[in-house]
Image 1 (cartoon, rainbow, N blue to C red):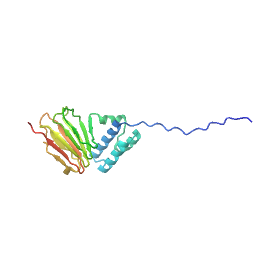
Image 2 (cartoon, rainbow, N blue to C red):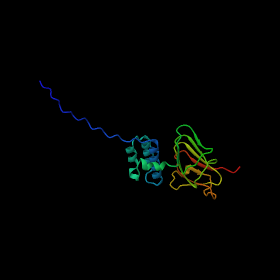
Image 3 (cartoon, rainbow, N blue to C red):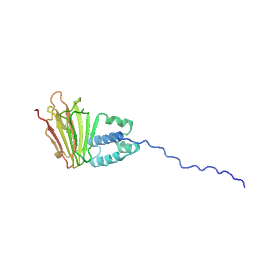
Image 4 (spheres, rainbow, N blue to C red):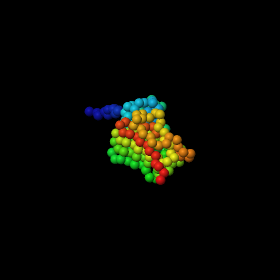
Length: 197
């Protein structure tokens, strides 16, 4: 009996490997979503849903889907959104950003149950305009600025009854201005100004 070799049966085609997203990619997309919410293009419920999906995303395709209708994309183009941005997001413990530190152009502050304090009184700041996006759940965000700095609340802020600004709105000549876009829920956002010694 002659053994005849049977033709090889082709196996299933291998799916292309999708590029994996990193933490900086997820944060860049999250920042695009926050900006879109501040501009009124998505509401807060949708923002929270998309943020949860962004932080759970493993690939660029998953991230792209979250910003496709907002004119954005993940990957190299989104990396520029993370430049000069400080992200403060305590999980369980309280967090204080203070002492001698360099203030970036943008700060993203989010807390669900913790106290988050951002103290600018000893910080070095080379910018005249700093944008702060602050969001709370049951937690509390406190901003402390030096004398001479100005703090204004952006009109796109929500639930402004939970935002208390005791700092001057207009900065003194040569001093920075913070523009705070606040999205507090039950926890407040409080801003105070240090007095001169």
